[in-house]
Length: 233
Image (tube, rainbow, N blue to C red; front, side):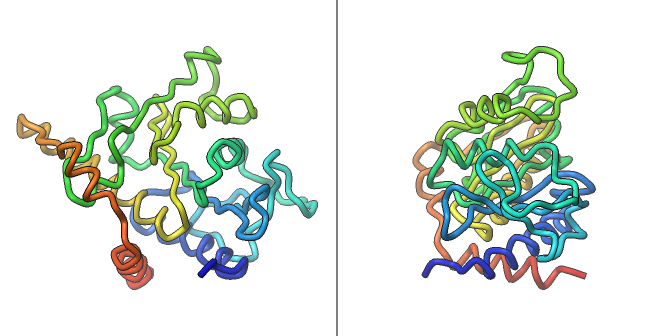
């Protein structure tokens, strides 16, 4: 059953709080969802610390990143991350951009992020890197222009996560609750991989294990969502 617009708005507001509570988002980062009835639009909060986001803070935007209803409230400067991924990937229904502490060492070092646990298989077969230097030279590392968002979307390609050199990561999914699952477990996997590296050896999943373990079913997604809700203050 397709989720209603009100369901998406509720889940999107909750996802902001859940990802904050799980240590993925802090004062920065943002989450969006494609409009369930109009694929040329998406929903995203106005510029707030994610833990403060409520349904009243959600605005509807076009794929040009402009709000459908004029607002005097400030929007996130990096809306092009979301709009350009939705433009490039019709099957993507939700996007999260974050700077989780467990992910950042990979973004800084260039060390490949690979699935090392069963739940880490949500990363998929590859977590590609995107470097703003390659096309745009020295910037302030924020993506504020459509061409920057389009470049990131090309680097993401068909994958579920793209690492942004010296900046953070962007994760995509087929729904908001799946996005929560993928974002939390890809970050947790990064922590496991880094700790295993300190012990001297990283034993990554095989391609066959990744293929089988990454087939997400509704039950674990809903179980993880319920677990996250129960952990909210």
